[in-house]
Length: 440
Image 1 (spheres, rainbow, N blue to C red):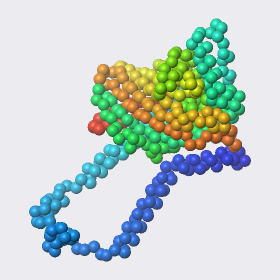
Image 2 (cartoon, rainbow, N blue to C red):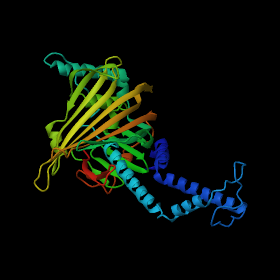
Image 3 (cartoon, rainbow, N blue to C red):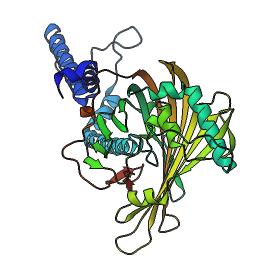
Image 4 (cartoon, rainbow, N blue to C red):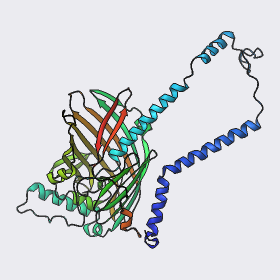
């Protein structure tokens, strides 16, 4: 990128990338370890020499509670020696630690693979105007949806202001955790989910038309994903860079209160299917289904996307989008001619804390609950995994100087076609539960 083009954004991006880099944490850990070692050396040099080790109880120890060391007696000393003679537990502890580390890495892959950078169901162009509000010869479900979207745009800042945004930047925090795993009717719950949640940070850039880039770092691993307007790709440390099948689609995270114009365009073809309370607030429900052509374009080989449905809940009080739910179902045929396996992924996101930023209403926090349901084959072979994410937005800016198309160039080593991942999740037993995740 030309130096003159970089400006404020280039410096900002460099600082954020440096802050997200796992190498920074490693350097900090190494520095802390060096300080501890130095302190131990100083303490060893300043202190007195260690006394010779006694092979029995101290005969000089004073009895009673007079403040001196208590005399232990031969029986207790012998019991202590028997304890020392037992095989050391260090090997077992090391093995347990290695298993815990492997489980954590697999959990992290699962969290980042599913919640890191999911995509919206269909292609949209925020540059295209929304359908004109019409009642004549229009089904009531469609005209109601159009009216709700007009109110949503007005509540978010207005069509004119939203259309003036050339690019946008957002930075925030996330916490991710796997909360529950079920297989064959047996449920394993993470009873320390709050303490074991993986903290992380993310930064998102967007630029019209249809370009976006996200970096998300959690637990020492980083996921990159982006779109240059023609190609959607994702990069993970364990799989490298892969392109997504099908048409260019927006990042789902942008629909979570960060990009009102794209969210409105996403629901332009939706229908109003009713009302429901969300957190005590009356909401209209809009339903959008991916068309068959898009589903076929996203399918490949043995994996077929059967459906992808998106629901949007718009507050009747504020007009804002407060909840989105999407569910997609994938069928994976067996290579050996057996029964097909089905994967259903459901993501529920609650969008909260709307505040104006340069006149545009932006959600500054929220939470998502994800369910992965695998079924098919034998009746008792189903598995269900539940995960949660909480996020908060720290900084938002619009029309950032220096942002150009060069910032959205995909990696040179990108691989075409969909990507399948196999993740092993040991859950308190010797069995490993494997499943396939598709970048869809």
